[in-house]
Image (cartoon, rainbow, N blue to C red; front, side, top):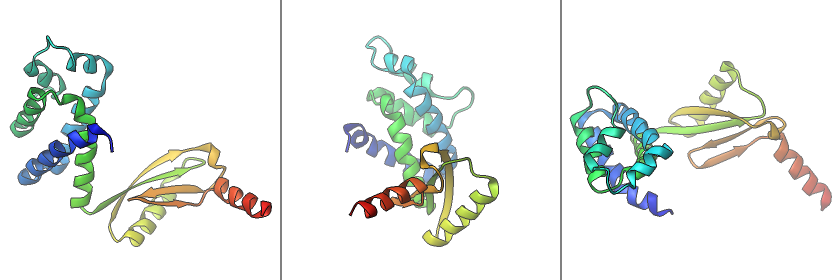
Length: 176
């Protein structure tokens, strides 16, 4: 486990508890996602480590323009004061995991050789929902090296139905 994730975990839990208390889990996901994207930018990374940039200036930098949730602003201020703004990408990722667990949602990534149409995605989503007994959020990716079929990575379970893997198994069986 990386040190960044170890450092980010208590902040992610705190953010989750604050958002849950407000009944604002989706809102905080968006806010953390925005702040994480800004904090991950190379120019911002350079400023985060710069000794002449104040914590208040850094906090303003990662907050969205306009009206911001006061609790979220205080959360970012604490991160800035503790020089932890660089952990925002990890915090956002851990927060989303906590949110998915609380909402009983399984996040699945389906990688296929070609882009899947909406009907195939809907059918796959329904099948995964039956298998896991939970709501499923499906993200798709394309990898032409799979030749055909798909690989589903959902909640720590990997289902590999790709032609590439089947050919590899066949080759291993023929070699023995």
